Image 1 (tube, rainbow, N blue to C red):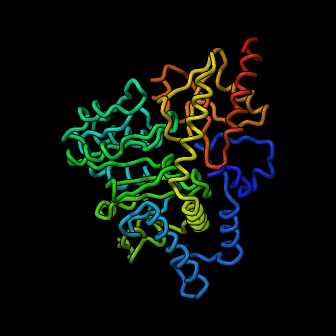
Image 2: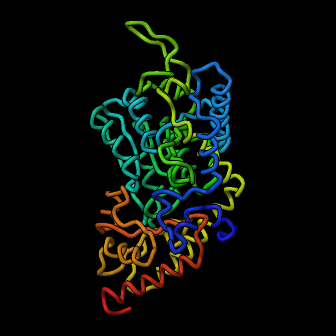
Image 3: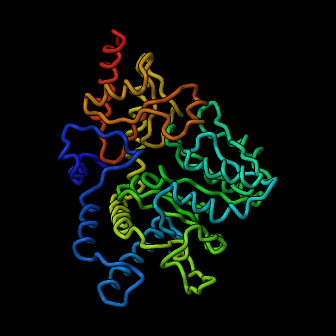
Amino acid sequence: MDSLNIHHHFPIFKEHSDMIYFDNAATTQKPKYVIDAISNFYTHHNFNVHRSVYTDAGETTEMFEQSRKNIASFINASIAKEIVFSAGTTDSINLIANGYYAKHIKSGDEIVVSIAEHHSNLLPWQKIAKNNGATLKFIPLNEDANLDLNSASQIISDKTKLVAVTAVSNVLGNINPIDQLTTLAHKHGAEILVDGAQAAPELPIDVQKTPIDWLAFSGHKMMAPTGIGVLYGKQYLLENMDSPRVGGEMIESVSTTEYKVKDIPYRLEAGTPNIEGVIGLDAAISYLKELKMTNVQEQCEKLGQYLYDQLNALDGVSVYGPTKRQTGIVSFNVDNIHPHDAATFLDSKNIDVRAGQHCAEPLTHKLGVNATLRASLYIYNTIEECNRLVDCVNEMKEFFNGSK
């Protein structure tokens, strides 16, 4: 895949022609194809779904439900009703925590996460463990900064009810061994939840080939709008999930004293949904399918490895994570320069990177730092942009430290 051949698909790069955008793990830019799909919805199909019998609303409902089917196909879900629309990864995980595990986790049970989790896949389980008297356990990293499978095999036990792990670390950029973790969890009768926020934009996902129980991901990290996400759950789990939110559209009938809910997924989608978000996510997935996810993965891995190698070769620069890169996420620090100062300097050169703890504070502490710089690359980034970042890091060292 040639990044430059698709660069013109993204209107923001015409508006900001000097910008090098390396904050894709936070949110991705949107191709014209997605923008046009949302504009087309508002121009021609702006009707509510599932409610009205008139033709226009019926056509919009068909578009909405076809999007559900397309998204199910994207991750190879066995049936479209296993796809629940949410506001994003954080919302999906909270729905699973409050709608299912709040009543299925008991005193003495154990929940297993990794030390590298985003707060979105940590705080809900801290809360459930505290409220229900369960124990939260952490899988550590090995010397190569990968998840330690040997430790995982000791930590996951018959007391484990849930293993909740990210597929891709949003700080280290490594891909976790979800196949092996799924086998381990199921061997002990536990379910496994995968935070796919960083995986869905870059990697092919097949929830039948790797039979995970839950998956959560966000649209805005894969070129779709903000405020739309996906909760995938195996059908029998969703059918045993309470509806954390109640109100319009999710009910079959209501009396003055009780109500009866609809079948899944509708009983988990109270209120008017983010229709334009769903349409935009469907368009983004169509765009990714056209590019082919294997090509997307190869491009991001190539860029990530190149930038890692270039930064790692610099004196006074620490790069975190495995030496063999698997994604476009590269976190680093420059000696004697605070990450926020470094990010401000790079901003003056029109290079956008993230500085901070990246909503993964326990991992940051484990790395022995207060914060890091993160350059997260995507399909429209280029080798030339990586070189520009490296050159500016050298300029930064001279500016702050008086030497290269």
